[in-house]
Image (cartoon, rainbow, N blue to C red; front, top):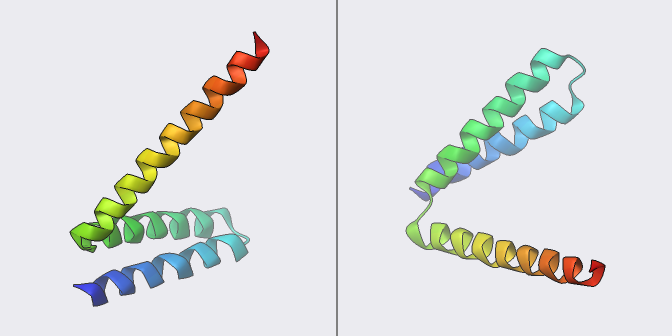
Length: 77
């Protein structure tokens, strides 16, 4: 299950590089959609521990961001 995850992640990285370097808008859109699909598949195929770490990182960064916004708003008042 690790090999398909690496394959989809590699395809996603390549398609992001293609979208950055492409000059035609249709190629950029197709590459971005391919990258999003592959990143989603790579998250689906990831082991549960990796998903847990990603969820924890998202929760910690969202709490930190909301705390920074709260602190910034308190300085304004």
